[in-house]
Image 1 (cartoon, rainbow over the protein chains, first blue to last red):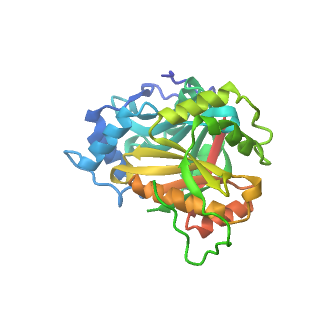
Image 2: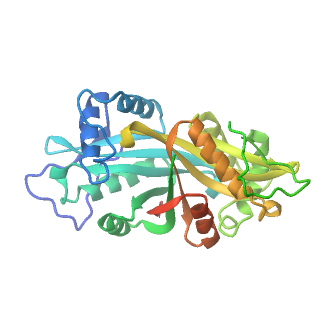
Image 3: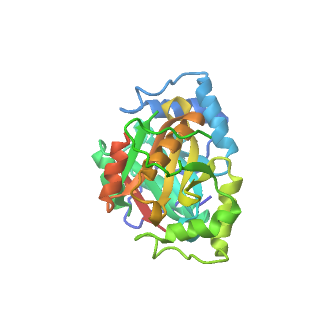
Length: 167
Length: 167
């Protein structure tokens, strides 16, 4: 997995540890679900608590056993600071190329506003290069204008409409 | 795999066979690549020809061995009429749910304008239900206004921006 590199113009506060990235393990699950629930859109959708709801346990097992899905946890200042899921997908199009899909990016409330999101996405891009992807893609809710601006600043192009259908 | 049901208000031309859906096999590859290349955006990106470019052979093998990726071919009137790829992804969010991602929807030139696209997306939605997905999602290039309208008519909501980053 890639080591994170800071952008040249980024400020590092003295005394704040660099974030570290790793694949989530089963004992992270309760805390990850708490992070998913601590969000305006997530609050209504999630069931946090200990022990973890069996639906989360099943989903975690499915992610863990799939070599093309990586659930990435970010630690900073000695605690869990963020989470995201990367999915690597082989396609025929573009002369047979892999893509990396980023989903479920969440940052713990106490770690917001410090540039951690940028670190996470830059790390994901490096990981996608390691896995020989030709394209990184994600969708972002139009109700989150700061997120839309953020991805634009990181070099992503909003060339597509992102359609969802609830079943 | 689901059998396709026609919408009530859909017209079936007499003498035109119903489309049939199946997973692609290795011997379909040359023809699928031809279909990918026969498109305004695809023409510059693809390398059609026989035998298939090794990059396509590798990508096909990766799709075939992954139980969470299904490359679906549609046959109509005795020939290959369309192709699409479905990816089934386990997520923790929404209380641990699977999603179906639809990509690479292509219809052979001689089969366009007959409602086949609607049949394909309705089939994909049924397949997503079979695989217990809670959500179907896709992105569509903003340069294709007819496609955007088409997905809206099928019940998809353009709630998200679709961001891409070329590597």
